[in-house]
Image 1 (cartoon, one colour):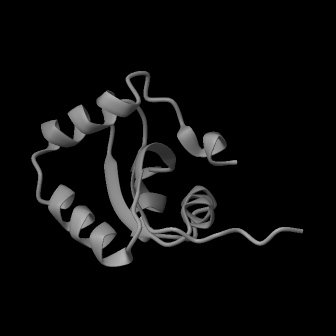
Image 2 (cartoon, one colour):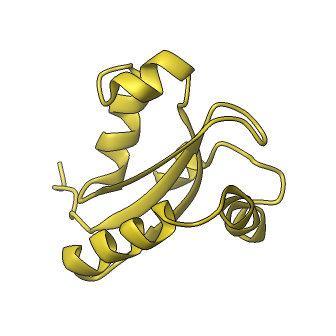
Length: 99
């Protein structure tokens, strides 16, 4: 079995189209989204049913990913929606595309 390579990523989850959003950063996107889907990652995402991966961005270095996450978290909601729709206009759950 081949070991997965870890790569820093910034991601956004949603409860549904235009629903509650969550922005996070991780070194293992597959594992982290799985934890959100299982309700083990964050009390916020568990409480509000935020478990659909609607946007992500890979980075070469963790400090770049953290800076990008911090930047996005400071954005207006509308800007976040526009970022999601530029990559994923149909608001599909992108989790399966990670495999």
